[in-house]
Image 1 (cartoon, rainbow, N blue to C red):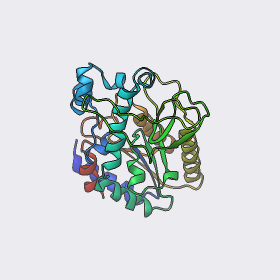
Image 2 (image 1 turned 60 degrees about the horizontal axis):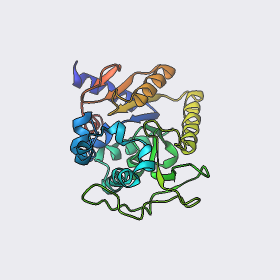
Image 3 (image 1 turned 135 degrees about the vertical axis):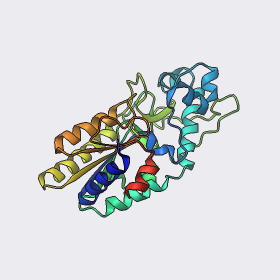
Image 4 (image 1 turned 120 degrees about the horizontal axis):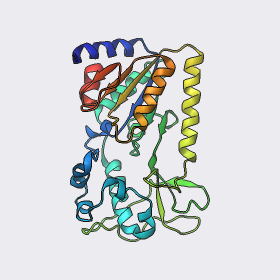
Length: 272
């Protein structure tokens, strides 16, 4: 593979496009300092207490903990809430935003990340779809009223033994424990209404680009194969519009017309 040649091909597509579809997984935030939980050891390095409990990411990211041990559940998600709140998006986000603002149809984001980094970087919320939800919103563990509310005022203090200190976030309607509006593993109470509304806006945007003959380019960044939601979406849209897929991933760039085995910031610096 000739990386420089692929960079030049991608540059031509980006220059000629008037609509940008950006799909992103955990690798997008790594250059900002966020963990990607790659493999069990990667997760345990980020959360040593999970290693002590012999819990994988899939086992920890389970709504059952909000029922059986809410202090443990909120230690994990509370730490992530404050981590995402404190981290600043890397400069690649700004470069993508500048690119989007230069195009007739702008850009739409499809991401499995729950961190809100695209919005924090300046992308309008109405142009972002978070397919696994967002830590920026909370819901009742029982979804009693089918309502979401902002986590902006939520503060979680975590003890040395990895327990969230009282008071824990509670549902304002019924008083039960609250949880992040994130799709977890074995999750049957996730309220998907917010994500569905985002999907409707994405479908409308994409239909308008197609109906008006817009020239779409698809840039996928840091999306792995272990949970392939983002990769599948990128591939489907590339087929629908019959355009090459630009896939940026240092370890798993395979399967695209234009493969860039680079980190997000390396690729975006080269492209933009």
